[in-house]
Image 1 (cartoon, one colour):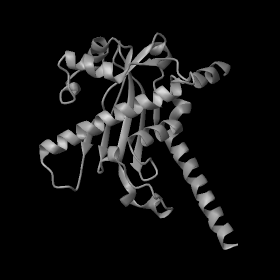
Image 2 (image 1 turned 90 degrees about the vertical axis):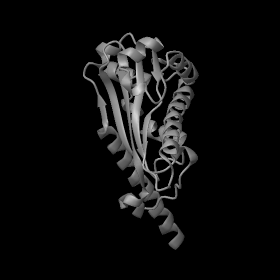
Image 3 (image 1 turned 135 degrees about the vertical axis):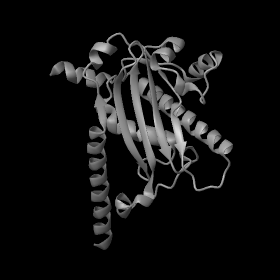
Length: 224
């Protein structure tokens, strides 16, 4: 009987957390009222490395910290490409995503690096990359997510700040106008995922119903 009660408690706790996270995800999503108008001709989007700020307890030099921030930023770029590629196999999106190796190569040819990419506008980057829009974002971390983090999550952790690892913000901008089309922000904790790839996969699954380039969302919108 005790085992049954424990199992039911774990099941109900998991269900509660999933529902809560899903509702929270919807609240943290912004979709521009002009999305359909500005994105009607979109065919290809580029995924940029995410600008990352690390607040680590380790005693390391500024140079080492900058290198680690860059690695985390590129890890998010790679994780998004993996997620979109896997979902694209099921023909779930209305746009294509530029190969990130091509994105890196084109940026490098134009002397654009992780260290100076933030001085360029969305319109400038879209023109250089020859895409219709860009996916970019920021991330604040107090752990090296790309190397993996503990995922043993208890009900107490849900209310504890010790299980918080940071925050991530994702946005999609129109290449022609530079205007913000879609934005999603999420806290990162033990339940978010064991590494960067897992984080992006889980957070996008929570947000996919409001991801503007999702084919199913487009069909549902036409029915209304």
